Every structure is written in C-alpha cells, then in structure tokens.
Image (cartoon, rainbow, N blue to C red; front, top):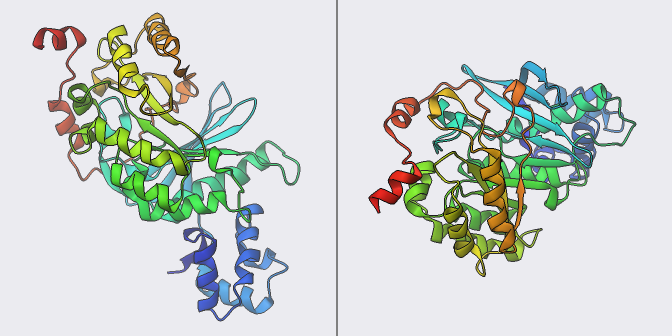
Length: 374
C-alpha cells in the first residue's frame, strides 16, 4: 500500500525523502506543495526534480479521508462527515467568525472517556485516527473552503484549530503531535501556537508530555467543582482527580503560549449550575491556576437524560465567577441545526466498548439529592 504523505510532519517527511535517496531540502518543497497549495498530484509539483516525482508516483500518495457528506448551517457553520473505514466515520466542523475561521478536528473514531453529556461518548469507541487522518481534516477543509469562498491566493480560510471534535486527543498522543507540528509549521499552515488548542478531559501525564513536546493552548474539560460530581460526569476523574489535574495545569503554564488555562464547563440543568457550585469553583482555582472559564450551553440528545440550564441561571453562574475576577465567557451555540454544536458530534462508530450499556447504568445525581445525601 502506498505511503500517505499526510502521515508525516516536516521532520518525518525529510527522513522519508532521505530513504528514497533524496536530499532533505526536497521535503520542504514537497511539504509546501501538499499543505500550502493543496496538491495531491505529484506531476503538478513543478519545482520537484522529475526523478523524485517519478519515485513518489510509484510508492506514495496524498490521501485525506473520503468525504461522505457536507452540511451547511444557516449561520455559515459547515460540517463534514469523513469515512475512516471499517464502518467508522468522524465529523469535522468549520465555524466562521468575524475575526477568525475555526476548524474543530476529531482525533478518534468515537471516544472511550464516556463523559455523560457528550453524544460522542455515547457512541462508544472504535479506534485512534492516524496522523494523516487528523491532519487530513485540515488539509481538506482549508483547500475546500478556499475554493468555495473564492479566497485570493495566499489568504487562509482557517487560522484557528481546536482539537475538540470526536475523541480524547491525548489518548492518541503519538498521532496527535506530528499533526500539531504540521499545523504549526511555516512550510504548511503556519498557525500560531496560541491558535491551536488541545482540549482534554484530564490525562495528567499526557499534559506533562505535551508541555515538553509541543506546547499549544490547553483547554480542560472540568464541568464540576468537586470530585464526587466530576466522577459521574467525567469518569476519567476517578483516575486523575481534580487536584491532580490542577497541578498538571500549573506545571503546563510556563511552557504554554497563553498565560492561562481555559476550563470548559458544560451547563447542566439542576446538576452543576447552582450559585454555590460557582462559588466552589472560585475557591478551587483562585490563587492557584490562572484561568478563564468557557461556559457551554448543553446541547441535549435523548440518551443523556440531561437538560440545558436556563439562560438566566447560566448568566447568574457567570456573574459569580466574573465578580471574583475570573474571565468568563458563555459560548455561543453554532451549527446546532446540523448537529454540529459542542457535544453533538457523533459520526458513525463501530463501538468496541459497550458504551451504551455502561452509560445507561450511570445516573447523574441532581443538586437537591446531593444536598440531602450530604
């Protein structure tokens, strides 16, 4: 089977070119053709030596995942469903904004973490994506959008990437890091480290590795102010509790491109949205972790058994944090008419984890019952 050149960051591509008996500088030319110009036909790569083009034609290809469908929301959000084989498909979302174009990228076919409020987790888990399948989402979306938006030569469609699609990125670390390096490379997409964000549910050891290998912006799925509730909402908390997670965030900050960590907090009606829980969050992070909070309106789906917090309760929750001096935003829901909003990405997953059965046995304890139990 032909080697997929999307699987390589620049260093990997240079090593591959050397294995073909070519100089390393050829990798830079090749990398630019693939990622800056979107070329997949080696004959188009006019400044490559003819001998190299001939070698590549016999052993290599540029192969992004095949597109199954494309849906465009009324607000301009675009969602693609990509075929990643064996009955699995992943979703990728482009969100146009006044000051940026954001691509939400998937890292796994499904997710094994099983967060209660996330439809991807309810789909279960099949496998990790390859580097080429991760980077290929950006490769396809960038060049597709340049065509459909009729952008002038040299103008990017995407200048912000968030690893917030299907999957837990840090559980697919070995494929993730080369994809991140491709996104950051000036010979590819040239994205700022501040404009590439990895979102994690809290794998503390992998946060430490990311700090050393490729520190980009970090977003942490917190969703609860205490371990008892987070154990239910984010099962990974049973292995890496909140204290351990916050310590990892503190260690990450000196290498981070931003001087704060973003905490994501999905607002669930009657579960984690009370003012006393907001005050508990203040006590948890104040003076410990420089941070901002991104409050996310829950996007309901039938299997969750959860409801979205009313807008007035979300605003009251935000005010508690803001009054304590913590930068807090409420995420605007985008693309919900095409099931492209946060927590809605499900794709098609051949589950190997019996996720539906496991999640059906778990119950989220409402606030009133939590107080009674205490």
